Image (cartoon, rainbow, N blue to C red):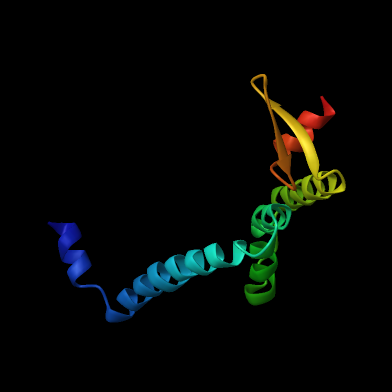
Length: 117
């Protein structure tokens, strides 16, 4: 088939890129992340994980001068606002379908919005 022919004729450099993406950029990163999160608090983990898109945008700007879009900037502001607001009051009671539970740290924007209702 055409797909099999395409796969078997790929340049070796493409295979190196695929292997790097799968093994280093994904598997190793997730493994190291799993080890790292065992030594910090849930609040710190949630701030780091929630702000990942912002760090990605900053890295893209610094490395390839990618300018963020207006939507991206608004999203970053919302993420940072949610992190800041929930960090001010880290133990927040959130109600999901009449089930109350305590959550800690910067969760998702829903947390902030649910507090304003």
